[in-house]
Image (cartoon, rainbow, N blue to C red; front, side, top):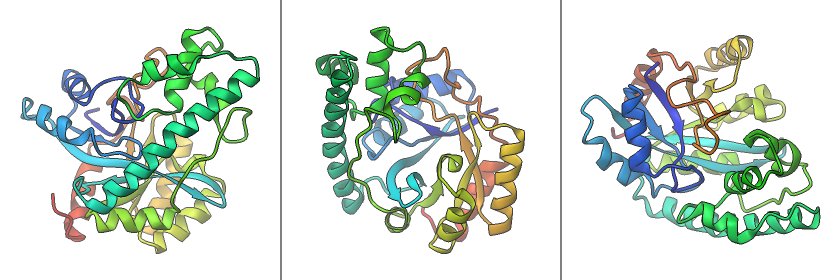
Length: 279
């Protein structure tokens, strides 16, 4: 497969710089990729510049916005966004500031539980990145408190777990409207993480949602077929990607390996054209 529409860089909580991620995508034979960092667009420009070295590779500018709904945390992807939009940049600055404070509080909770991961180590791992939970997970992994990246979330860092801390988020409707004002297409990320996902998808489709992530890294055939049926029923795009962070290649799905069909990109571009999205 040569399509991956969900990738992270050091601009948020990925391991690789935008340039390195583009290099990796080109090495792996990707034809189309989307840079979708959490609540920031700072990785887009360097990724676009690096992609100029690879005529066969297209980088779609994107973002993954964190939102909060009564059903729980919901992540919204935005494709073809204007990453210079002042309103978007203002929201991202607020989210970045709150993200760092939240990470520090989560480390404090871990320490109170007897998991003595160091805040200095987490900051060192993050470097100049937009610090987040994957950096804490990597510190836990390196210190031997867990045996896999996923275990950090299963035991400590997910909603309802002992080290979880809420943070500033906008609502899904606000995120959809923001992406649209930035000239982008709003798509729900990994919808099966949302409670009552079909009900939520139906409500958000009426609010301007353009697609859902069907071909997600670890969704099986039955899950994909069920989501595809919802997408067809509501005339939504069926996108997909690996959600690659590069934190633990032993367990992560590598770029291009999420099984995203080739026709997804054509459908994405057709919808963008119908909506008048600048490409």
